[in-house]
Image 1: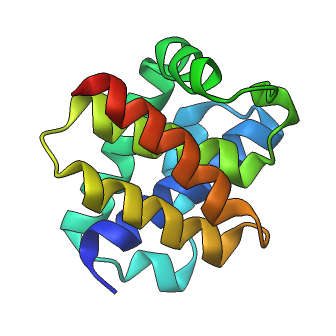
Image 2 (image 1 turned 180 degrees about the horizontal axis):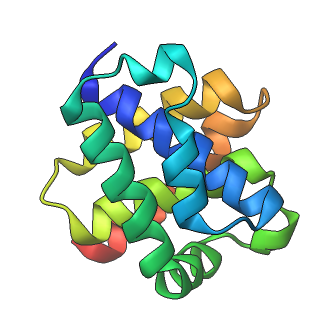
Length: 136
């Protein structure tokens, strides 16, 4: 698994923790690497994961509005916490990072298949594809 994928997964875990507990983001960041496995992650993985976590929260109103504009009949509150946060990460990357959109979308789909339900990949693909088309 590549560094970016692992960083995206870590950002997903942090956003999930924030979304479900509403704990202070700094508390989540300070305690996230207390787990022995996560503590072993490279500096690059940690830096990108933390950047994604912070930037998604910083830009959350616009990111959420963008996602909702493309999710017909699905308010963010009705989406699973996993799908919602995968979409937030990928939407942030599409809007603010200089990354290849097909790679961003594919990574989000793969993470959705791993951590979401049987429909997550298709759902995530549809929304991100619509967002990407608007960006072109």
